[in-house]
Length: 286
Ligand code: ADP
Ligand code: MG
Image 1 (cartoon, helix red, strand yellow):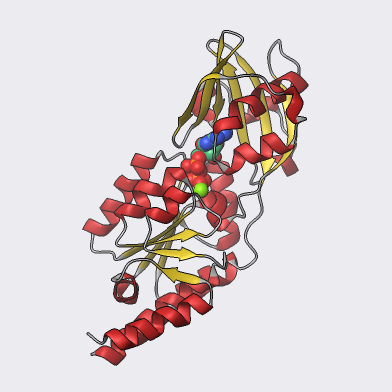
Image 2 (cartoon, protein in one colour):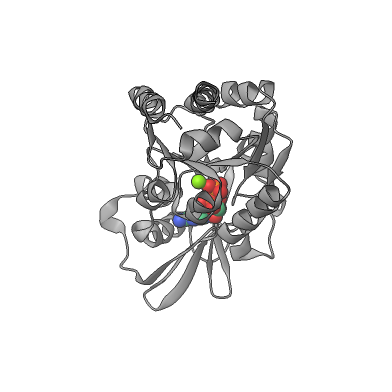
């Protein structure tokens, strides 16, 4: 190998806000033929805005929101900040036995009652269509559900935005003959909405962290060289399991620690730039 060429490439990338944390990253990038994205916080900004709180049981919408925000106090998930930003902090409840359920949500006890807040698996018996949400809210929205042990209490509609350069990156990757997929923990409707916008036809939804890792292992066994891009606590196992991985700069510590490259710039197009540079560096060395 030519260490000097590699070091030069590394410092060039750093100037663009792309930090290589593992030595092999550039060589592996040169071989990548499949790029796999997480959705929330990766393809989207991960700053969902709460659009609507809906009461579905005995508890009114305002109290549902206070309960939800209280449960989110200990969470690092992007959705947690959305809830906490929507309430007066002085109205939060004390939560006991707070727990993070990876790829699903959070749970805890408030005044002796056990609550769960998270994706549709929290309330398997009700669907979004039963709620009769308006079309414009439904498109691409993430719905978070609140339930006590035996009752559905509320639903929250949150909307997130596609990163400005996501479409450009996906089209560059495809032009270069690289396959593109999404593995997301969010629901089918939300994932399909963004996949359609990006013209990505291979995507999976409602995936727990272990499902993401299993899907990745299937791709890699089939001979794909995969670059995984993620941001969250839930993405750490799959980032660690990919041949090469990128964490978003604004992502969690554990995502940074589990990946080979940190995208400090938060610019998705830099992923293509890094792959291109990897390809060129390998040519120089050989
Ligand atoms: P993605 O793969 O899109 O980044 P995650 O794996 O982080 O999504 O989460 C999957 C889904 O689980 C989210 O779309 C959300 O419905 C639910 N979820 C996870 N963590 C939380 C949380 N702290 N609060 C509410 N819902 C959550
Ligand atoms: Mg994410």
